Structures are given as C-alpha cells and as structure tokens.
Amino acid sequence: MKLLCSFKSRDKRLIKVFINGYGNIGRRLATALSSDKEIQFIGIAKYTADDKTKEALENGFDIYVPNGTVKQFKDKGYDVRGIIPEAIQKSDLVVDAAREGGGFDNKKNLYEPMNKAAIFQGGEDRHGERSVADMIHNSRVNYAKAAGKTYVIQGSCNVSGMGRIMQPLIEKFGDKIRRYDVILIRRWADLEDSKEIKDSIEWDKNPHHQDDVKDFIPTSNLYVDAYKVPSRMMHLHQMVIRFNGKAPSKDKIIETFRTEFGVAIVNSAKGTAAIRKKAMELGFQHGDTNMVHIHQEVLKVQDDIIKIAYSDDQTGMVIPENHMLIQSMIFRRPRQEAVKRSDALFQMTKKRMILEEEFG
Ligand SMILES: NC(=O)c1ccc[n+]([C@@H]2O[C@H](COP(=O)([O-])OP(=O)(O)OC[C@H]3O[C@@H](n4cnc5c(N)ncnc54)[C@H](OP(=O)(O)O)[C@@H]3O)[C@@H](O)[C@H]2O)c1
Image (cartoon, rainbow, N blue to C red):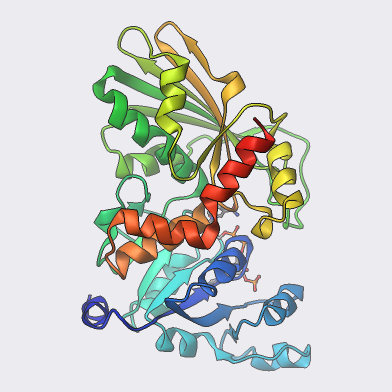
C-alpha cells in the first residue's frame, strides 16, 4: 500500500512497468505498454535463452534474466540488461505474465519482499493457499474497485468475454434474467505455441470460469461447461440465457451491444478462423482483434431463451483489459477516460468498424 500511496501523490510522472514473462501474453503486453506515453517501460523477463529473446531484442526491449543465467544468455549472443530482481526494484508495477500458477511464487519471492504492486493473469488462483489477490478485474463490471489496490488478477480471456456480454444484459434486463448456461469451446493451443494438437475433444471436470465470473458478478446464476477442441483459432462461447417469461426480441438484444466497447456484431463469418485470418490479413497487431464477436446470424430467440454465440479472441482480449486495470489501480482514472485511452492505444473502435464491414 505504501508504494501506491506515494505514487498517487506524484501521479504526473511516468509509471515504471516491468513485464515478468514473455510468452503469448507477455509479448503482447510488451508491445502495447511500451508504446504508452505514460509508461516508462523497464523491460521484460526471459527465462529461456531461445529465439523469443532475439525477437524481444529486435523490438528494442531491455531483457532481464534469472540470477545465475546471464552467462548462458550472453554465450548465445543475447545482450542482457541485468537480473530480474534489479528490474523489479526499479519498477512501480510488475505485470506478471508467468505460465499458469507461476505468479504465486513470484509474489512471495519477489513482489511482496520488495513491496511492489503487481497484476496477475487469469491462470492464477483467486482462492485457496496459492491465491494471489482478493479480486478479479473485469473492466466492464468492477473497474473502479481496483483503484489503489496492490495486487489484482486480470480475468482470463473467457472470463473477460463473459463479463463483457453479461453485464450489458444485466443492466438492461435485470432480474428478468433467470440463468445463464455457457458452453465454452476452447482452442487447443495458441498460434504461436509449438505444442502438438491432439485429435480429440476433451472436457473439463471443473471449469474455473464459473467461479471467476461470480467473483465480479456475484448474483449471476451462471453455469459453465468447457470443452477443448483441436483448433488454434479463438474460442467460441454458446451462451443460453433464460428469462422469466418471454425473452426479448433479437433486435433488442443486438441493440444492447451496438455501442459496447470491445464487442463487434458480425453476420457472415464462417467460423473462428475467418475472424483470426482476417485480423492477420488486415495487419492488426499480433493478429488480434482484442474483442468478442457476436455472430448475429446464429443468435436465436426461442420462447423464454436467447442463444448467443460469440467468438472470443483468446490472446488479444486481456491485453487492453490489463491496460484498463493499470489505469484504475495506479492512476485512479474514471472509466470513460480510461476507455478513451485504451481505445487510442488499441484502435478497438476502428477495428470493430472494419470487422463489422468485412463480415456485414
Ligand atoms: N494464452 C492465452 O490465450 C491466455 C489468455 C488469457 C490469459 N492467459 C494467462 O496468461 C498467463 C500467461 O499465459 P501465456 O499463454 O502467455 O503462457 P506462455 O506462452 O506459456 O508463456 C509463459 C512465459 O512464462 C515465462 N516464465 C517461466 N518461468 C517464469 C517465472 N518464474 N516468472 C515469470 N515468467 C516465467 C516463460 O519464459 P521463457 O519463455 O523465457 O521460458 C514464458 O515466456 C497465464 O496465467 C494464462 O492463463 C493466457
């Protein structure tokens, strides 16, 4: 807390940010945060001296490595700025982008002893012995609650997407909604992952998404089932919303999302790959749209239920969410102002218009 209080009193200066991890999420965060004029970008952590180290150097990022590994990196020709604890010491905020579950040890071994604020990613635990924070952030729902916090988890891509769809419906239809059932169809691996894709459909006995969403929408009567399929192209959520009595018309549902930040309404995409490939073809940064895409042509109203299918850009969703979270935690900015800044950085309104036109 001491750190954030002292930061608040001098909040005109640049905030110093370090990214601990340079995987699928870390490298995207690095691209975005290093181009924000309010951030003094300290650099990124690399743990393995592989090709991604070269990529980070080519992108101009300072690289910090674990104690005792500097020689290993230098022997491979990679210029290293220092060791990870030095970078954390220099920073005001660490954005942890470790592989699922690694954030807890980083918190105990590094952030807490050095009294540094940190953002954790959605693979970390909210409850139990390895809990890293007492809240999960969703910029559409509980943005303001993160103001001044020292540790916060940014919800995962799916959890972020569900919040983005559910909250506008709650605001418009309130207790007319009885329950939500979501079938979550997850990609096997990200495009950049080297791991093999297994020809199988696997289920999850206990998906974390249901409890994670209830962390920021505690009153939601939500049930989630998750299946992993052999694809690398985004996730698809089939959300079934049951109303008390007759469900609203399709037009009313579409209208609810017409101006929602980070929601595109498309009508002719053949599947998740069509959206991802279009984003790459159009040169969107890292091939990300950073949003969810409601597939209007399969949105159905049947008696008391609405069925909404939307694809969720698994790698891109959480990057503007982390950016929004920084603006709440550190700058304590009103949400509308934060949205404007994130939109300027990620060009999401423009991307949305392009996608809606391409898939109109
Ligand atoms: N991938 C997605 O679509 C996605 C979406 C939303 C949220 N998330 C969440 O984001 C987090 C990161 O996922 P990811 O997909 O980016 O994983 P990833 O691609 O497997 O990358 C993990 C990174 O962690 C680094 N690492 C190793 N030990 C570390 C340590 N002690 N501390 C910090 N970093 C360490 C690795 O570095 P080296 O490469 O140098 O070994 C690697 O770059 C997870 O919590 C995940 O659940 C992922």
